[in-house]
Length: 209
Image (cartoon, rainbow, N blue to C red):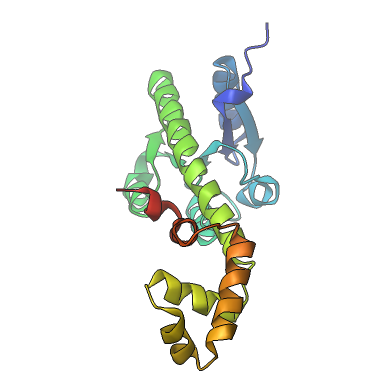
C-alpha cells in the first residue's frame, strides 16, 4: 500500500551528507510525507516551488552555500517556508541565531525520531496557515499592479477619505479626471461600491475586527 499523501505537504531536505538525506527520506516517507532531497542549497533554490505547501529541513554547515546563507536568500524572497535547522553539537549558538531570523526550530544529530516527526507536523501546520496568507497577499499585489501610478495616487486618497474635489486639488487635476480615474480603478479592481473598493484596497486588514 502506498502511504504517500500529497495532502500532508512536502518536506524539503537540504544536506550535503547523503546518509542524513537517506535517513530522513526513509523516515518521513514511511510516515506518508512527500520528501524532496537536495545535496546543496544551490540545487534546492533552482527547484523550489513557492506554490507548494511545504517545510524545509536544512543543515547549518554545508560546502558551498551554507544553511544560514540559504535562510537569508529565502528571507530576501519573502518566502513563507517554515525552516528547521539540523545542527551538530557545536552549532547550537549558531542555530539560536537562525531562530532570531525566523527559523521555527533546530534539531541536533543524532535525531530523536518522535521529536522530528512532531516538528515536521508542526512546520506543515504553520506552512498551511502562512501559505494561505501568502497567496492572499500575492493576489492582492497582482490586483494592485493593474493600476497606473496616477490611479494608485487617487486610490490612496480615496482610502484616506478624501473627496473628489480634494483629490483634484491634491494632484493638480480636474474633478472630471478624478472621476475617470475612479471609474477605471473600480473596474480594474472589480469593485461595485466604495465599500467594496476599500475592502479590496486594504486587503486582509479590512476583514479583521
